[in-house]
Length: 326
Image 1 (tube, one colour):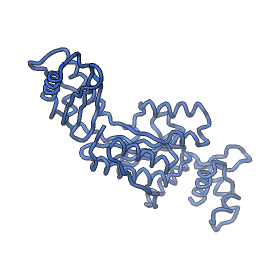
Image 2 (image 1 turned 90 degrees about the vertical axis):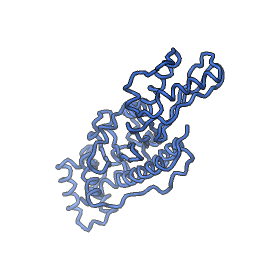
Image 3 (image 1 turned 90 degrees about the horizontal axis):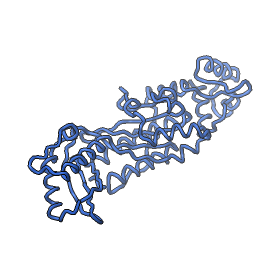
C-alpha cells in the first residue's frame, strides 16, 4: 500500500509514469530498491498499476485509485477542508460562489445543485407588468425556490392583471409540486384563454423548479489538465455535463452517508468513463441537493473528497439560512 500510495502521489503531481528510482528518492519507505521493484511488479500483476510501455514506469489504474480511496475512507484519514465560507446575499449568488470556491480548490469542474422537494408548495404567484404588452409571471415555492417567465398581457389593464393574478393564486397557492404537476386545470368560473395559458405556464415553471437548478464552475480548469488535450474526450465529457442530461441519481446512489466516489469506468454513464466524480448529497429543509466535482482520474482524492464534504455542509447551511431571490 505504501508503494501504491507513492506511485499515485507522484503521478498526481507530474502526470508522468513513475519508476522505482523516483519512489526511493522522494519517499522514505525504509526498504531496498529490489523490494520496491518487486512491489511494483506485483501491483501491476494485480491490476492496481499499469506500464504504458516496457521502458516506462508505472501509472495507477482505476483499481489502484479505488484501493487508496477506500483505505483513506475506512481509516478516516484527514481530508482537506474549504478554507473560506460563502458570504452571499441570495441563494443564486451563494450557489455560484460555492461552485467557484470548489473549482479553485480542487482544479476540477464543480457542480452545485439546489435542493429538490416534492413536498414544497406554491407560496405565492405574481404578475408584474414590464416593458411593452408583457408581464413577468413569478412563482415562489415555500422552500425558497423562485422561477419566472415573461408572458403576454394581451392588452389587460392593471386592474385586470391583478384579477388574473388573484385567480391564479386561488387555483395554485398552497398546492404542492406533485398535485400541481398532475392535476388538471381547475379554472372554475374564470375560465378564459389567458388564464388557461397562464395556468399551463405555472405548471411548467413548477416542474422546472422541481428538477433542481445547477450552478457550475471550472470548465477551463478541467480542460487545462493534460488528460483533456484530446479534443474528442473533451467534447464527450463537457457536452454531457453541459447538456444537463447526465443521470446524477444513478451516480449518487450510495449507502455511505451520501458520499460517492466514482472512478473512471465505475461511472454508470459511459461518457464519464475517462473522469472521476466525487459527490455528496445534502439536505435543506425537506429537500435534497448535491455538490460534486468532476476531474481526471488522476485527481487528488483526499483534497477533493474533503472539499466536496465541506461544500455539501456549506450548501445545506446556505439553503437553510438565506432568503432566495431571483
